[in-house]
Amino acid sequence: MTHLSDVESKSANDRIAELRVELKALETEKAQRAAEEAKYRAKEDSVQRISFAKEIFDLHQDQLRLEVEAEFVRKKIRRLELGYAEDAVPETDTPDGFVF
Image 1: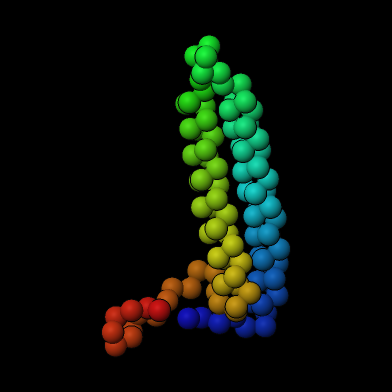
Image 2: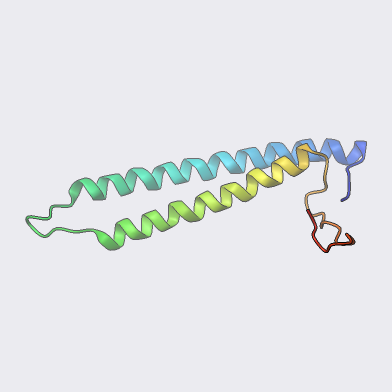
């Protein structure tokens, strides 16, 4: 794996700050989707056959997508904090073929 030099480390710190802002935005958007979903769930009424299944499904799917995107950002931050280049590819020259 490629480790960062001192100059790259400064830019890595800047990149980490950018990624944290991006992560916060993703988490905020996910919370907004959850609030919208809760509103639709509250409006549903099985007696009157009022259902918002598609809207709830779409909002829940968005929340899952946002969680995956946030997880990728968290992993990028962690790699940079550990001193690895953001786009570094793991070495595969291990005798057993595993990269871990």
